[in-house]
Image 1 (cartoon, rainbow over the protein chains, first blue to last red):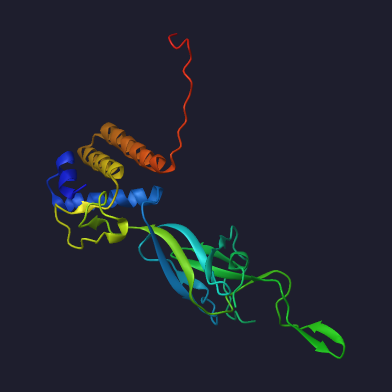
Image 2: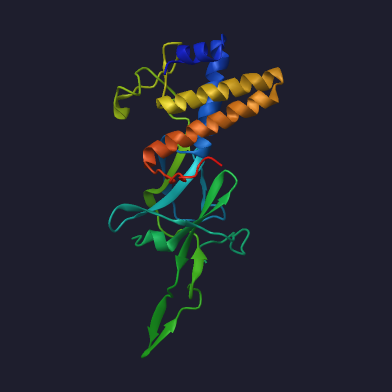
Length: 97
Length: 156
């Protein structure tokens, strides 16, 4: 459906406002259901500092569906589980020991 | 080499980040004389440690996002892989959703307009219609239907 058709059906005359409302609606759709799924990759590094196991979530993320780590033996990404409780360590300044 | 990552890696959410943990249940050992001993600094039993191996593109996120909202082609007649994003959309641009979801978007817009007018009853009505159409769109994919037999004594 074109933006013009949506404007005619709703009676909206402001194109910029219509675009903004459509973005809001799709944001809500993507929050509650799955219309299109995006994928993003990042490198896993050997931790040498206290925050080296922190990885940024994708900037355009609306709803996280899964996190996977590559199994280098068979080159497949396997979904990993979320911890329900945090480990007792709040900050580790020497992760290698 | 990372093996069975679905069993050995875990994550937790921390604001805009995730924290990756690796589960290890091995210990480094050494043989002294004829005795095999565990080294005092090594991990032992089940422990969560920081990732100890670099994996290029090792972390994969699957998520929903605002991806190609406005497109040049009609999504109902062109294959999804051939759709091109319209970076400067105009009134002839298409919204990248199927028709049922486009109708749901119209309901959302009507709800927003009624909210701006202060008509909360109509806003609620259109939001209900919005979610109903979203539900219809979802169930169209899954093809699940429930039929109930009608009672022969339906007139009560």
